[in-house]
Length: 148
Image (cartoon, rainbow, N blue to C red; front, side):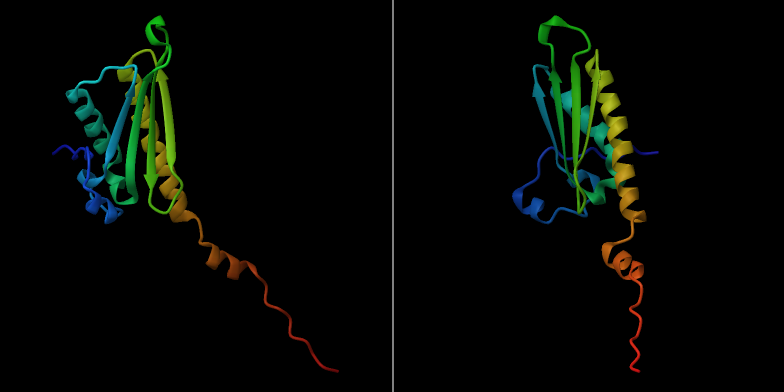
């Protein structure tokens, strides 16, 4: 079985304008780092993880941003934070944050959590009736007035 494709590092502006219903390699994933050193291989690993977890929802995703930070700095403790934000087409953005003592645990927790959150959000869209249909079905018919 082949591995799912990783999410894209960058897209040209012309491609962003036509993005929306795109495959996983065309979904841009921005990675921001604060107080943590990430190598190119680690960034590529994050993109591959995003592709594995979110690839099946790529047609509904406009972009993804990942923020990794060391909250306490050199003091130690449970201080690695990974926050993932997914911008969905036609729905509010979904954000999930995970804290852990190690960067790997924070990343894995955030990836698992964002997959659940995106799936729930997309399932709600599929099961929720539209306002137009719900408004017309809920309104009772006006009784006809009779003249004496």
